[in-house]
Amino acid sequence: MKRFPKIETQRLLLTELTSSDITSIVEYASNKNISNYTHNLPFPYSEKDAIYWINLANLGFKNGTKLTFGIRPKPDNEFIGGIGLTIVPEFERAEIGYWVAEPFWGKGYATEATKAIINFGFSDLGLNKLTSSHLAKNPASGKVLTKSGLMKEGVLKEHLVKNSEYHDLVVFGLTKKEFEKNRQD
Image 1: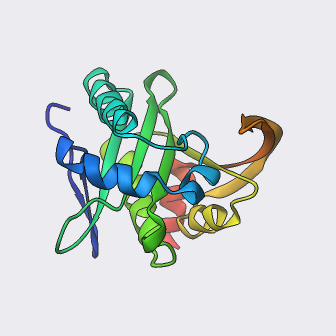
Image 2: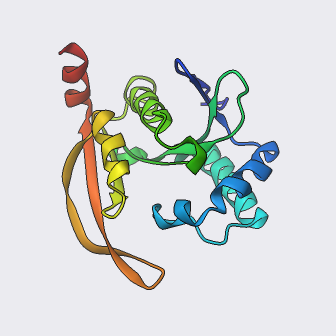
């Protein structure tokens, strides 16, 4: 893939992260609620963290292991969150990760973006399986994954340590066969 893809849905554009997003990324990711409900967003979140994330996204795109998109509602196309695929090419699999800024929670943006990423992963990238996970204390993320078509595969007990506390991780997955069958139903 030579050019970073652009994905369009009814209400959203999913596009490459740029340096012009830094101010919004820092503003929205500096929210303790965002950090509390995600695996790896630090708190406090600084400009240095945003620059690191964008650089990591660029490097992942160059080496074919990561596609990280900014989530942008139409028509203003301003950054409100991120979604991406961490690709494991040798297994034709990727993990979906996402976050949406708190002012935009409950509007269906995470679900719409996740559905678009799932379609992209299977249809454009030819992946065989997509996975995702969420902290057990964040059931809203589980609803996003279920509405997007992923199925719960299990719970990894005390799998992560965040803020000196152990967290259960709820794991979801979807195979290409299941995706295609669901599209026919």
